[in-house]
Amino acid sequence: MANNAINDERWVADRLASLEPPAGWRPSAAAGLMRFHQRERAARIRGRWWIAAMAAIVLGCGSLLALHSFRPEPAGIARPATPGSFKESGSSTAPVTCEVYTDYECPHCAQLYAETIPLLVAQYVETGRVKLVHRDFPLPQHPYSRLAARYANAAGQLGQYGLVVNRIFSTQGVWSLNGDIDAQVAAVLPLDVMEKVRGLLNDPKLDDSVAADMEMAREDRINQTPSLVIVARGKRQLIAGIPPFSLLKSYLDDLLK
Image 1 (spheres, rainbow, N blue to C red):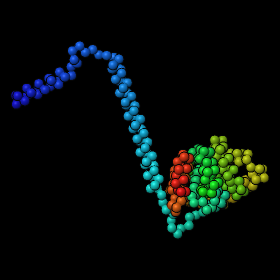
Image 2 (image 1 turned 90 degrees about the vertical axis):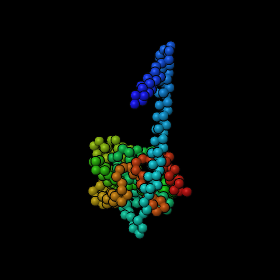
Image 3 (image 1 turned 90 degrees about the horizontal axis):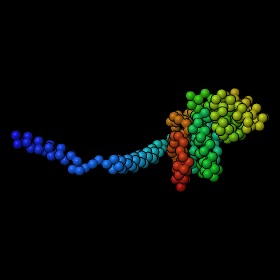
Image 4 (image 1 turned 30 degrees about the vertical axis):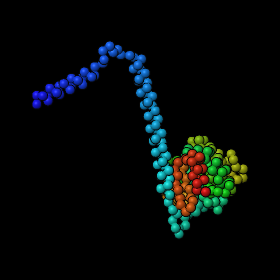
């Protein structure tokens, strides 16, 4: 036991001696600063690698989510149609349908209609490859979104749906302050057409269109705006949020092969 204690003391003494700097050693602030910067750069590189790796994982998970979130159309069950074909544009025989759920008072929806929808229409809808369907999904926290939908749907019955939809979205920052949608719509419609729109606003049938879209939203499990549902090959694919057009284009091109 005594020998073990002596050996332990010697080992500790040797360890402590190894920590002593060599004779003649003098601290160098410049060398220390240089090593500090080298370690800092190495840490930044590791940080960038970690961020890139996490981004790749997130994108990979997103791809997996897209693949697994497909759900088939119910066999033998007719899905409720949106009253008024004015909400649809493009060829009825297009192999892919893009259903867009929006709230007129949602800023992200306005961004979608300003940036993504025009490209989608030009490259896919007007070429007959995609049919576009607009669906109303007014959120309860937005006091004027249902009124905006009534203006758009009333205009749709008079053949002015697209014009009014774009006007409502593009002026969202103005009318959302006080609910004066009428002034914005009147700025783009002839006076006689605007008077007809105002006359249709009290038509209870306008609510049927919104109700049908809300029922579709329930079936599609929509819980935010904007949301896209891509219908192709007998399946419905939900895409929540605003996908960059480059990703949406790649996805549609794969479906259309």
